[in-house]
Structures are given as structure tokens and as C-alpha cells.
Image (cartoon, rainbow, N blue to C red; front, side, top):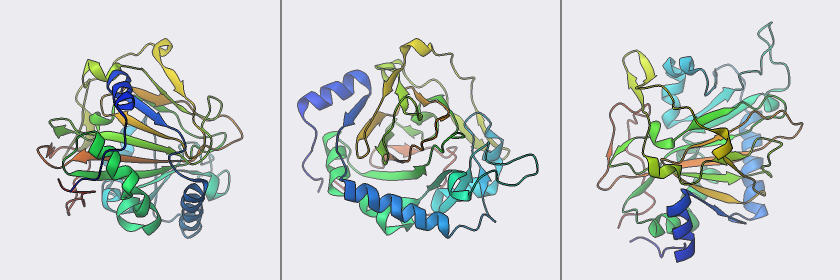
Length: 282
């Protein structure tokens, strides 16, 4: 059975109106530190031999097998600007990785504990999900000086179900500010519908239409303290800028879809061999 819902009527109303909801102090300092410590261990054990480079502006890497296989394992992706002209890292590997994904919630006990926590389940109970499942998880570093830009996008573009059901979750593991690359969103943009999809076929991935042009004046910053949490509607237009500051901006991102009454598209980039484990079944 689903747990009791945790969101108030006012919180649900704000989410329905704006397409996002910030929940302050969602995770304790101890929980945040445990996830940061665990990621430091994973990065320390990563030898750099098997990896890829990630960029939201250049999707050529989305044709490589390493990226597709990352849907069901723990994989490492370097920042676009991590390497010098000689092909070597410009800085230590722990300051060079863009993200680790996309199945931390499946394979690592520390991240699985958070993903399958009562706090997460009760949130989706409030949102009316019948069989919610985490479809991808990412630890994002937003490295100082080279943390890559994330261009304006909607999560349903990449994680498409019929009917649409993706909700994004974003936990600040460090303070996220305008200076170090916090999220920005267009309030209410989720009401304008999904603008495009990313399709996977035999040639890799491609978008079915160009990205719309968005007015930067419509975006508002979502500055957050470490431990704060934001819930993101799948059609909300959001972005983050390059981190040119000397301070990193670590975050954990989860994306959840409903596996009850919603069909996972066969041309999404994620095509799992095993079905995702639901948070609960109602």
C-alpha cells in the first residue's frame, strides 16, 4: 500500500501552479554527508579507463555503448572541459567528473536508501502515483571553473511515457547559488505541453524537432541550501549555467515515472533489461 502523503494542500497548489516545489531541509546534514562520502569513495575507486564525456550541447556521445549501458549500472562521465589539448586531464579526476549515473539507486546501498526512503515514497503518494519507480539517478558535481551548462529542457523529452508521468527530484548536496550554477526554471511552463522528444534508434539518438527559443527573462533562480530539495514537473522548462566559480555544486538527481497505467516508450534512450523496482504498489 502507498504511504500517507506528505505534501500539504498549499504545497500541492504551488506545485500545480508553478511546476516545481522547493522543500527546505528535506535531508539532514548526516544524510547529505553520507552520500558525499560514498561518492568520494566511488570516485577514488574509479581508474578512468572506462568512461565517457557528457555535454547537453553535443549529443554525439549518446551514440556510444557506454552511455546506453549506464542505464543499468554506475558509470562515470567527464566534464567537456576536463581535458587539455594533449588529451590528459587538466586537474585531478575528482575535479573532472561531470556526473555519475544512471543506476546508483539500483546498485549502491547509500543511494538506494535515499531513493527508497519513506520521504520519497510519501511524496509520490501525495502526487497520486500508483506504482512509482526511479528510472534514473545521477550524482552531479558541477565542478568549479568547468562545471558544464545544462541547456533549457523538459525531463519528459528524455523519459517519455504514455500518458506522461516523469517527475524530477533534485537534492542539493552543497549550497546551490546563482554564482555556482543553481537551477533556473520558468514558473508555469509545464502548462504549455511537451515541446520535443529525444528518440533512440539504430543510429543512436536524435531530437524529433529543434529546441524552442526561450526568453531568459522568464527564468527564475532556485537557490538552495545543502539538504534542500526540489520537485520538478516533467514538462517544466529548466536549466543551469556553467559554473565559473571556485566552488563546486554537488547534487543528487532522481527521475521517477509511474509504471501503473503508463507505458514506457520503446524509443526512449533508457531500455532496461530488467524492470525497475517500484517504490510501492497501490
